[in-house]
Image (cartoon, rainbow, N blue to C red; front, side):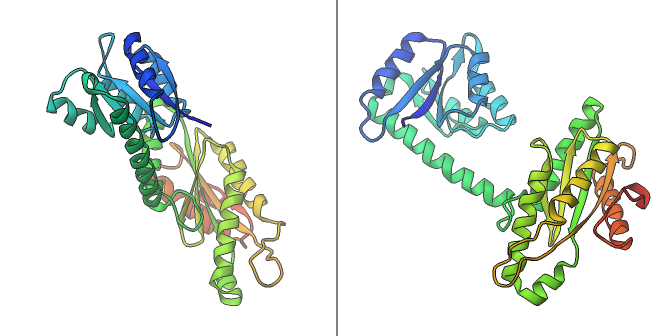
Length: 302
C-alpha cells in the first residue's frame, strides 16, 4: 500500500504540479492528499495519518512556519518538508529551527529532487523517532522512563493549574520483588517487570501515563482524577496483578502482589514534587500495613 503524503498549500496549481511529479517517482509510489488552508492542514497533520508533509511558506496570509511550530508544540512527529518560492538562506534556517526536516524552492523542484527529499525526510524521521524512544522509554518495559515521567508530570501539573483541574498520582511497588531475583535469577525478574508493566498499562485509562519510576516501582499519572478516581485506579492496579500468576521462564508461574499509594493535587500537594512525595508516603504506609493493599493520604487504607 502506498504511503500517504499530505500537501498543505493554498495554490491548487502547485498541488497539481506536485501531483504530476509524484507520477514520475522511480523507487516508491506515494499517495498525495491536499489541504488548502492553514486550519484544514493543521487538523489533518495532527490526525497522524501521514508518512510526511509538504508545507507551503505562505497559506492565504498565514505563516507556514507558525503551523510547524504549532504542530510540533502539540506533539506532531510527522516529518515536514518546507516549500517556498524564496531561495533565502534565512527562510531555510527558520524552517529548520521551527522543526522542518528539509527545504525545497518551488521553482527548482523536479521529480528526482522531490522524491529524494521525501525519502530523506522519512529516513531522518525514523532515526529521530528511534532516538526519541531511547531517550524517553524504559528499555525493559517500554514504559515512560524516569526522566520523561518528570517532564510529563511537570507539564500535566502546569496544565491542571491553568485550567483548575485536579491531578492524581499513584505509586505502585511489586511486593517482595527481591525474592524473585534471589530465587529465580534476574531473567525471571525482568520477565516479571515486563508483565507487571503490561498489566498496569491495561489497568488505567488511555489518557493516563504509566512510568517505570525505578527498580520495581511504577508511577501512574492520573489525568483530571480526584480522590475517588485515584483510589479506584490504585485498586485496579493491585487487582490487575493479584491472583493472576506470572510466567517467568523456568519454574512454575509466580503469584505476585503489588502495593499502591495515591495522592491528589491540590488537596495533598502544592507542587509536582510534593505530589510525588505524598503518593510515595502513602505507598510506604500500604507496605507497612502488610503489603498487597492500597493506602491514600495520611496512610488511610482503601
